[in-house]
Image 1 (cartoon, helix red, strand yellow):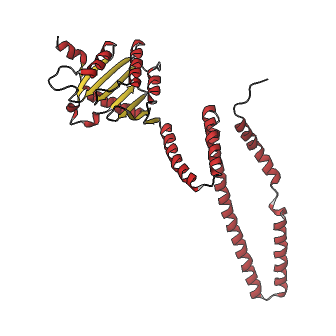
Image 2 (tube, helix red, strand yellow; image 1 turned 45 degrees about the vertical axis):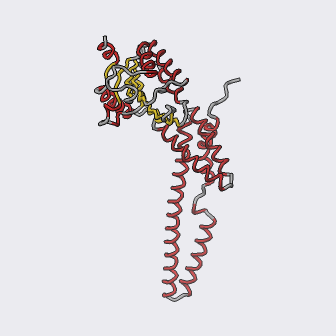
Image 3 (cartoon, one colour; image 1 turned 90 degrees about the vertical axis):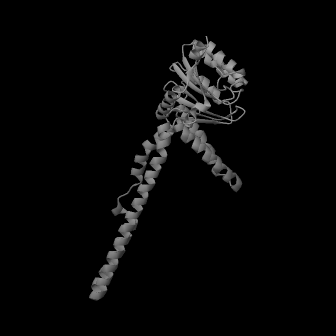
Length: 321
């Protein structure tokens, strides 16, 4: 037995489209042979003949004017119907364009069929409360899909973004990863998901990926006059340095005039930019992955500006010797 066809629905659609011209040709009949046309023409001719033979001239003119008005109205009505039919045809073609364009992508086409089937089932539900809730939810889903189409993925109130983070770092075409860590708590990336992500960083360095990280520290984590940060944050920084991650440090207060540089972000080569938003307990509020080239370019510019304020950890360590 051969393998089943992947696009059975689109095959049926193609057959329907091929059959449509022949079926429409069979249904079409010449207008002059139409029963309605012949009946109307014969009745009009008889009336005009009777009026011409027996009616006075004013009556003939009145009947002639009435027939001309009727013909004009029929003609205008016909034009209006043709316009409506043309709009209907355009709408039908437009509705077919989406599944036809997706037919070449089996995965997306399957998702499209599932969504279409669910919406069809939803349309059959009459509960008004369900409908209002569904409309709100669908608006959110629509916004998410629109973001995906633009190359933007948003993870809210979840650590599952780290799976995408790790997958991109493992991508063979990502040779450079530049990261900005805005550290506002000594527990920054100290939980289990954060520790696992650091291990992914260290494995990437072993594979030859260049990882550069600028660490932005609050004043209490790196007080003025202290050569190095202290406590758990220093241990976290030192571990990365020992594993081959290039580290540079800057104080949050140094960026008081350029607060737009205060951010948690990662630049994955020239492919994508990830931006993380944390709460006071260092839990993820939102992580946004953007694959738009212009966004990557803007992030690269921000990175270059940050380098003006940051000092490499190597130079700080050498200065203390």
